[in-house]
Amino acid sequence: MSTAAHTARADQLAAAVAEATRHQHRIADREHLPLLAIPDNPWLADQVRRLHTAITSRQARVCPHITGSPSVVYAAAWTPGLLVCPACVGHLRPTDDAEDGTCDRCRRPANELYAGIVQTGPLLLAYGLCRHCVRRTGLANLHPGGTP
Image 1 (cartoon, rainbow, N blue to C red):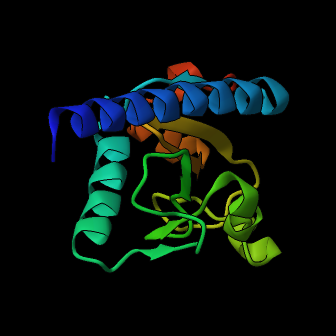
Image 2 (image 1 turned 45 degrees about the vertical axis):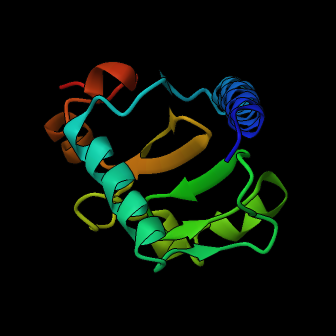
């Protein structure tokens, strides 16, 4: 790849990251979610690692709009290995009420879930944790009502 091509690719990646940041802020404002710029939390970092492994091992499922060009990509902890573009984000919705009320960490039903979205590069990863898991992961300080 030429220097010009590397520069163009870096510019595309920077634009995708900036666009992902805008998406994250809009979603966080609309849904009253905490903002996490990087997955510095061990549980979130593990979710991102698993997604990366699915991508690099070609096990990830991707919407047809995702190409090799840098762009905003959405994923959700409740649908491991699925990556979608902003236009297909509806495919990440939980499949039923039971899944919608299940903690993404312990997989137990919960009356109340603490939702969040973390950004790493152009990737936005959504999650929902029960009160116990939001405390166990150390994310309680980001979620009103998640502390004892």
